[in-house]
Amino acid sequence: MQGARPANSQKGGAKTIMRDQFSNALQIRKPAKVSTGGIVAAQSRKAAEVGAEVLAAGGDCVDAVVATTFALGVLEPWMSGLGGGGAMVLYRARENRFEVIDYGMRAPDSLRVDDYPLTGDGTVSDLFPWARVKDDRNLHGPGSVAVPGVVAGMEEAHRRHAKMPWQELLRPSVRLASEGLAVDWWTTLMIASSAADLRRYPASAAAYLVDGLPPNAPWGIRSSVRLPQDRLKATMSHLAAEGPRDFYTGDLARSIASDIRAAGGALSVEDLGAFQAHLREPLAIPYRGGKVFATPELTAGPTLAHALRLLQQDFEPAKGGPDASAYTNYALALQSAYRERLQDMGDADGRRALGAEHLAPSCTTHFSVIDRDGNMAAVTQTLLSTFGSKFVTPQTGITMNNGIMWFDPTPGSTNALAPGKRCLTNYTPVLAQAADGRRFAVGASGGRRILPAVMQLLSFVMDYGMDLDAAIHQPRIDASEGAVVIGDVRLPAATRQALSDRFDYEAARIQTLPMKFACPSLVLRDGSTNSGATEPFQPWSEAVAEAD
Image (cartoon, rainbow, N blue to C red; front, top):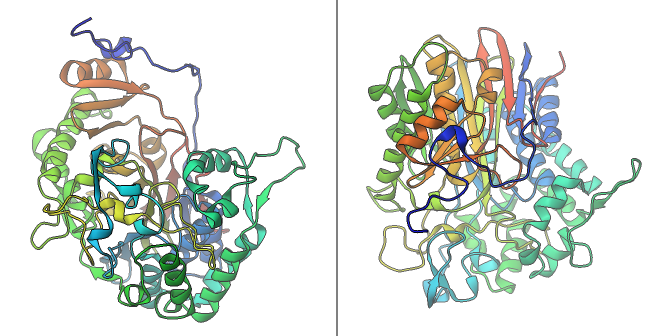
């Protein structure tokens, strides 16, 4: 019928029909953790426990960041790891100083644009809307690999602030790799989502598949299934002993470059050796008598600044929590910010507030850390797609990124593929100081959905005075998909009605996969009390406090 609305989006938010079969009675809560000690809030409980143990041993917030980063790379290799990139925002309590360490990926200097010919047969509709490249060389495999930055980022953070030796901070990840990758239902689900591409590459299939298929979690209560990570263990042991520079200029660099070049990629030892993490001044964004400190340049930080400016000038928060007006203004601010973002994208002089990547699904990890002294970190890292390039280097067992996918393969645009260019990023880790004196760190995974989640969580805490337990359980919207606004089905009927009247509105559930909203992790300091919280529907995530 011409002009009919889809069955799942009838006019009237309160009567929205869900296109699913899930229970309407299900309730899930994950209480915030409160402690006088340090806290690590991460997408993996086991990785958060590693960071919390470092804090309990007397480590600085940054010591916990380094240890947690490498543990995450072993425990959830589909999200992040040695082969990825990222950024962190740090608060140093003694100096009352905020800083950014940027270790985003970039295209190899040795990359040849001619190696990415267009097929002329349409676009890649399920990722970026780019013209299709022959053999999807920019999407997966060795040709999609950008220069990774995670190790350089940890090197810079460790050099500036760490109290504990590098080798000691990597020891837990070596142990975890020696135990092998534990297979539960979440592991099976994540591997299955990428199995079709993982099986293209022998080392990837050997690392993550069993007889060419995803591994099955065991039914028996005393049974366990683990995928060996012997090559990754050896790599982590070598990195621990030789130090971070070896990844860029030593034996590891030569091994990584050799594997990628042998398989047809461009990454060279010279590309690795030239990579550096950068210390940057954060964007300092005034908001409601407080201030938000965000990542600058090739991140979503500039877009967040736009959205917060509109929120502050266009609406006054009502008492009692976010109402229909608040959510309407969230949607309007986000849509305006994304429109601006799309007009100015790519690594070019004077044009560094980016946007094309908002259309792509991606897999990222975010964690937040606070220590006893009030030092804080918001850390976001990514391989870009799930399992990145799907290419595991045979000699080192490292799952590499597919950062080349961030570039437009059609020549002539600001974001056109070219040697040496820095990659676009969706992530926006932030630290904030509210008008009431509370400080907190927030960020999320979830590709284009990260920015809406971060903006709303900032509002929940800074506009409405919520603690983390209230903020993490407060329903959110997403407005990163052009005209469409997605609302949590748990929103009040009046709010859903208002959104449906104003926007092309869809209701969605918070669920584990495919996620319709981002997956945040936060920590907060109120006086001398710390708290931490993570997305309730993420099955592995948890905020873990150091032992008092």
